Image (cartoon, rainbow, N blue to C red; front, side, top):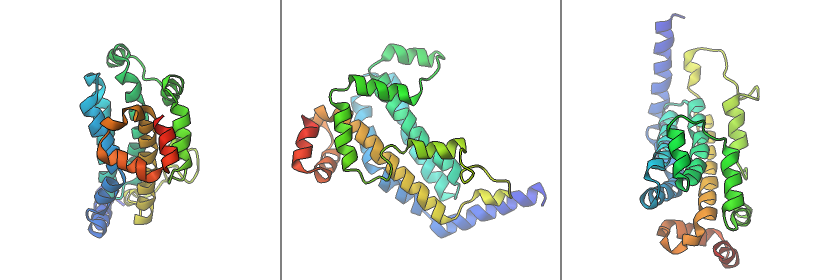
Length: 229
């Protein structure tokens, strides 16, 4: 098949996927990330280090990318957009309190790995690990930390997750695979909101009503009291 024919077939596959789903994937991703987007809005308004706010903007942008890619049936790039949310939001937590280090990043210094930020939170957040355990015990997501399963796809460490040789139209995945990606986005959103709650719960009375309502509905009163203590 010629390059022009390949491109035409790809467009046809994208058009067919979109015609079948319309705005469904935008709606699904928006719904699954509603709580996370509320957190981002709250954090953006209350941030001390306004320069690092662009990391929060990038997380929201990655959610938009996920919705857009799935609307076109492009699952692999959608997975990359889901995974980057995990990396950027925990980075923001650190750089929000480290303006000097952030200026060095802007100057070209290498970005630390995700494990660096998680270690920072565990060692410096009052009761952070205990709070995360409370929330993990009440989780709805399949994996306590979805980063591992996303990395399998990103790094193609499984033959089932590696890119395949085939026609361009094969880049458009069936709706069942797109739905699986929505589930990954849901799990990542819950995981990130758990991290944010464990790190910021001392500001309970300042948190938006939707966030407090979610915690109240999810945790029994005894566990909620422990979380806020």
